[in-house]
Picture 1 (tube, each protein chain N blue to C red):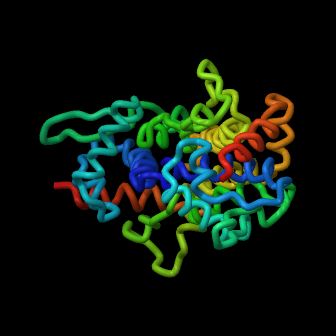
Picture 2 (cartoon, rainbow over the protein chains, first blue to last red):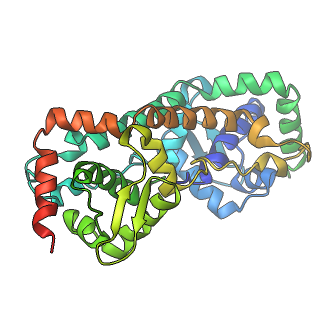
Picture 3 (cartoon, chains in turn blue, cyan):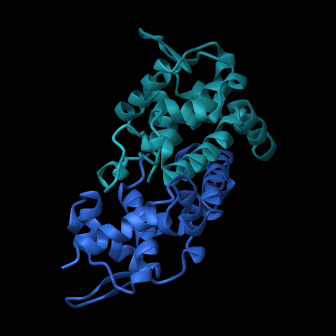
Length: 162
Length: 162
């Protein structure tokens, strides 16, 4: 079990867009990727997924790029994880009980199987933590531990601007 | 993010070994696999992982096979998941902050990064649910909803015995 590394990229990039959005400019993939030395084409794939999820908006053209489509207060960590990973649960119950002797073909063992129920409860606990935290909460805690982060980020993006 | 399907096989197989252990016999891979029509070689790989984790014991030879190495009371769902999946967290923080401007090379961002902290809290919540449930708990709930499961399982294993 392993989350797509794009989840890490997407979360950090959304935060960075939060810092730089005050400039009023959109940030193109090349710059967002260069900030962490990430492969631009692969980062762009993640950013497009965030656009489809309504988390970012993208503007085409030479001065185009990505912006937050919602306030950080309105984006939970789970929103970003689901945008990148999809909605499928980590424990994909294959209902092997259907292959067992005495199986009832009409039963949906994803719901009826006691093991599947436990795995679902665990997954729900995981999702609840991620849903209870917005990117604004994260921003607030970053400001506590790294008060220079917003200025440093904005400065970097200003300087690489052409 | 997707759990290995072997997790489902391993959990169900441990429960089945719990039902049939009263016979005092070990169950070979071929029979355990046939119960759910699973590929024997691949199931065997999962069973060997359970042996390495001290959850099952295996006996070689014509009357050999697998037995529970501990009581179901002493096996949590998390024990089985970790035996199959390993201990690595689902969110593998790659510390991309190290590549960012102003990064401190001495900082371990898996601990210092606010995003990594949130992902870790979620993972902990997931593990806590799985650790709070033993296979004996699961057995108890199976008995409530499927009181015939133990007898039916034992009967099946008795009949395929040669």
